Image (cartoon, rainbow over all chains, first blue to last red; front, side, top):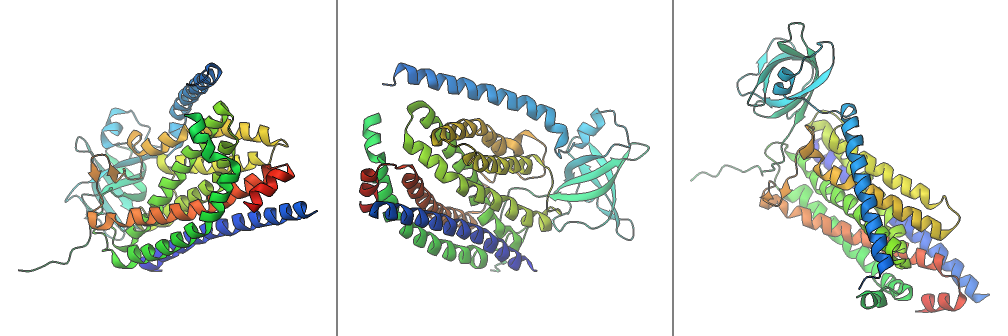
Amino acid sequence: MDSIETVLFTFLISISLILILCLSSYIRFMAKLKNCQEDLDD
Amino acid sequence: MIRKNRLNKIYLIVFFLLSVGLIAFFILRALEKNIDLYLTPSDVKATDFNQLDDFKLGGMVKAGSLKKLGGLEISFIVTDFKSEMLVIYEGVLPNLFKENSGVVATGSLSAEQNQFIATEILAKHDENYMPVKIEVQN
Amino acid sequence: MYKYVAKYFIPSKVYKFCSLTAMPAFIIGMIIFLLSSYFVIYSLPADVEQQEIYRILFIHVPSAILSELIYLFLAVNGFIYLVWRTKISAIFLNSAISIGLVFTAIVLISGSIWGKPTWGTYWVWDARITSTFILLIQYIGLIALRSSFSSKQTTDQILSIVSIIGAVNIPIIKFSVDWWNTLHQNASITTSGSAIDTEMLIGLPLMLGSLLLISFSIFARNIQFEILARTGKTTAMREIING
């Protein structure tokens, strides 16, 4: 890998980690919301 | 106004934090030996060294002191602008290793204690960042 | 003062604010991130000493700033929670931990990739790297603690105490390069000015801003989750979900 590719690779790893956290937080919240709404409907 | 019992809690936490800070300070003093700190040439001259012990030597590569000894072997002088020490090294060098630039070498003193036989060389770069400028001719 | 601040931090209001802002913050944050990444990787000039590889700075430094700021945020919220017993501080504390962990991981990974071509090594137990590694362990510890107790209240108190104690490490990370003879270079940006050329410097606030926005969107979703998880009564829950 040349220097620019290494830099690009570093940015890609970083944003992927952040996006994984985004997704897992979102999924966790949506699951909880669905759960609560079902409880309310009962 | 902050209520009396809350104020007491704040004092308690601040006192607690100060004691933790103090404890951390002493733990750090004790752990200093376990992290990779380097010694300057002056430090090395000031301490009585067993030449078998490995340690790190850091400073600037003195301008004009870098010499090729044949093959991959090189020698250069590390300076902290007060003391100097000759370093012998054989192996691959990091890209940023050059004269007038920072270096941290791992190794030990030679039997005569006058030169440092390095087994690893790391380049210590500075905090300055300057753009590459295309020379403009006028 | 307390009652003026408190009225903005009622869970239902915070929940509403978060549900309105999370998505826009994420989208704007991502757009700025992509544009400024392109800008710092392809448009900014190379560095005299390090050539192209110095560009890692633009992800490394903002992540480092965030990893430390988020920890201070945890400690401040822990402090407020312990003194005033405000539930919202505990919610904030719980919601920010995972974001801090990710940024600390990014600092160590990007620093490692940067270290090989410049210093000549991926890893060295120097003062800055060791103290940052301890910060990573602190975040992991907080996440482990979060699921170790059955009662929410106990968990919040323990998390507050631990995060306050751990804040001692933040000045150590900050000043490690000044206190010890260590491989990591000193701070480029200090009160006396910047050692990064002004032409390159613009990349830092751009990247930091975009990462802040994205972090906020994660933070907002975590807050919403925590509020739902802590609301017991049906009437209160209905009020929160239906706005």
